[in-house]
Image (cartoon, rainbow, N blue to C red; front, side):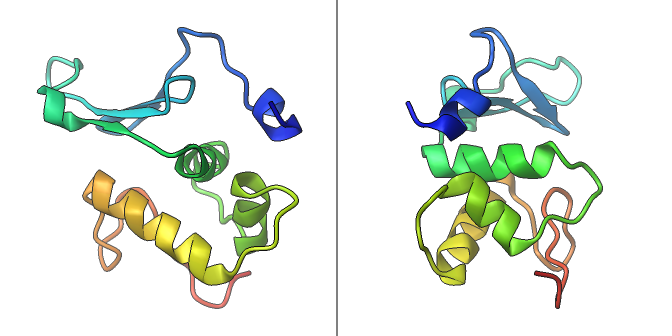
Length: 116
């Protein structure tokens, strides 16, 4: 376990609410909730995420309504590694696809041009 994983350790029952979604960072899962019941929808609405996607999502969730720089997100998801901005763009694109987030009308992840 690297230092970032230790920093991101959560109690085994901890989950993070993100609008209509719940992130389970321990199990690397993202669950879509039924609108009124607040319980997971059908099995196809549970997504297993790669660790790097969990890290990006956690970095964004820890700074709600704040702007995170590319470097902050790169450091969160790929600590100590040299990766291109394109790698981050692909990760953000994958998260948007899972979340059903349109970059032109963002609900969860918004790109601010010219920042970082």
